[in-house]
Length: 236
Image (cartoon, rainbow, N blue to C red; front, top):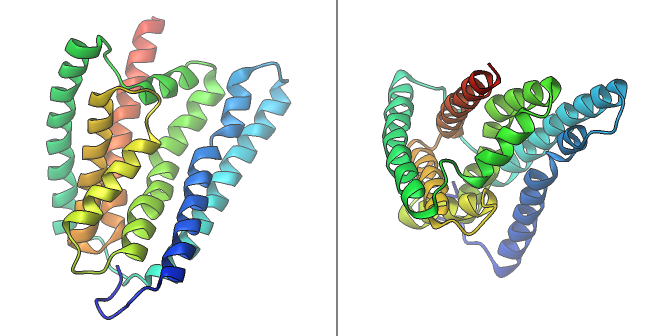
């Protein structure tokens, strides 16, 4: 995060807003090769080429986001401590409880058992074995890194100083949720917003992007695991 002594000009903010928009576009389009595979109509060889391209593009986008994060935020190099791990686990358990409660509300109010974003992911995973493998890899390992660099690392680190606590957490959570919305389901929006705020709080509290990445990884690992179990169970 910025030092308190740094004063950003209007030009600085404009430049950083443009960069953030560009990063958000990257997050939005990175799944395109996977969508081509899911659409069908291509040969097996073409699907494998799209799959390799998908992983390469994802890795390049992470590399670009990391360069921008380091250039504008100048983060301190911090190791992941056992205290950090404890915060990750406790935060994940807390969010899991919140998610269950909001999921029940979602069923009562909107008569759906999952968010639209999760439904889309589930559909991609059930298209074929290749999309399931690729989605599993990127959702668990790639997406947490890219999204944390964008919505926590750059967004909070480049726009807010170290004295800011509440505002960056709220802004990060709202924008993170907006990126994951596929409909006007308020419960789903609140679910993703709270997850984004918890991730942002950990980043602000520890000033360590590895901590929010760790929580994001754990959350996605559990979610993808539950989806895989559901898919295989239904398939049997």
